[in-house]
Image (cartoon, rainbow, N blue to C red; front, top):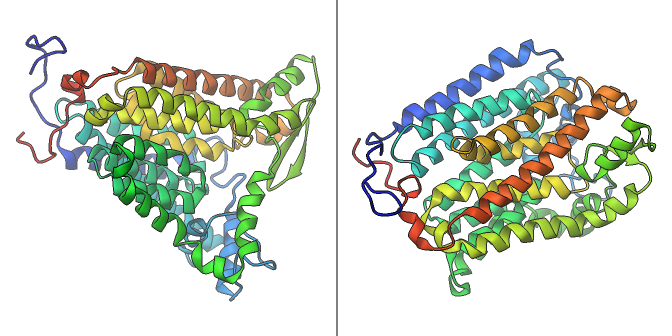
Length: 431
């Protein structure tokens, strides 16, 4: 093994990580965090949860009502609704909540296992895969019980599978996973151009686009034929949402309230607390354009480094992380559960990037510090939770900037693929 200059690398590790050990460790440690830590935190297991909403949808469907109709409008995409129905026990809200937590715990542990599997694929030499396997449950501990009280960990699972598909150069499969993400949460659509960028020239885009279209459209089709306005309501609902109180774009107003240099309040709208303050409306209006610019900046840098990324799957996770952070940082809605999306990519990047690991870990921890224990105090505009949200949002912006810088620092040509840490080998390689 040699370094970038072709010289022997005396410190190059010669052992391969055990895939089953890494995946099993991530799975078991995640279960331990959920089962051992979550019941003993400083707030209740089900404080401020969306479980009653999920149970309400599941109960109405179990009673024979048809969703996505004028009489039963739904703001979630179809795969999310299918996930709400999975726990069963619609006759009891308590039993439904218990089984929903069990399902989400299983998905979380599976996400940890897939993340460790990706790490073994990305670094077939050395112990970095074990570090990633440990960092994922650490991230779960940092973000807290919201992992099992919302369905967003299913998005995180798709993100982990997506990165695995990219590492294996299964681009049609990766596009299919993005399509599933669209039918689950809509926002994973932003990952599709990454597939096309890595696939190569447009003549190779056919199968990935077909795969994406099939996965994205199939869950919607039964409802489209029944009631197109009911399906459109799902998209319209999110397009019309105002600036959410915890969003990064609302940070200046929260800081003004904290320092006594302005005022801020809230109102209830579209299922969340929206910020009422000078400039909040303008911030909501420009959020779409800012998000597009941030995502475009990531893609511009990734396109300039596309040859390296095609040959260095270990560096693809930082691009995925940058894209997810772009959506979160400049979106007009930043709910605490959105931070769950970044867990797989964060663990894969943090295992070799101390700065991104530290900054990302702090944003996760501060999110849990504010939500759910301090959320009602935030609505009362108390100084402590205001300060936590302002610092968290500032760190999120800095984390995005650092990941963007990391993408910019990636080599522009394929020659860098010779680096030992970026070289990939089959998982069944000799140990």
